[in-house]
Image 1 (cartoon, rainbow, N blue to C red):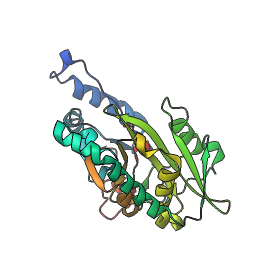
Image 2 (image 1 turned 90 degrees about the vertical axis):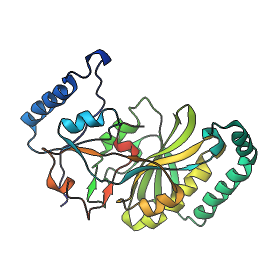
Image 3 (image 1 turned 30 degrees about the horizontal axis):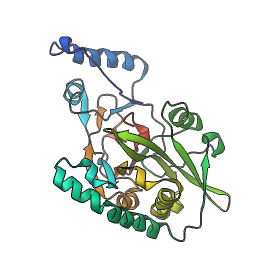
Length: 275
């Protein structure tokens, strides 16, 4: 309905091991929301909780909802995740051939892209208006984006996309380590809906032109099947590594965030604290 709703990500919760099993975790959650309700009668409070904190959060009033989030990837060095040494050795030998085929894969999709790509320092170089074409999507101001990706101890690469000097959107990547392995993550994406069909081409062009694929074990991103970007990014990142549980504090949530059957949803790694 084109409404802005106050939203909060429920971040990290830690309880000393000696104090666990005494109901203190739930009391921490209960007390938190007693205070939140003093200021907000309605709010979207969500979390992508891990398996350890999820049960406690659910007892505290959160509920799992099927936002259909998953971490999708394309492996570049499959041997790096293998433990069986003979198989690891074989895969390492044939990896140059495999990696070459992946490069051809991205090159094929990147052909005939008639758009301009600029690597920019921050979001002050990008038009202020956030482009939205989903029913549920974080409304990202310029201040938010600079806070999220520039005032951050991690380093991100921000790419502005233009069509004959007309602003089309942006992509944000982060080079990171996943379980000590160097990896590349698509942290955020925002494109004009008239250019959605070029998502695959732009992504492929960025990978081919701006990153050394030889360095990374895999390329990955959080993708929702309910996102307008799904059918394009899932071609570039075809393997689902894991599902991402999405929980919402039900008592405060507007019904539009709970009744999501026919809604389009955009949620990326940059919308959470897990990158």
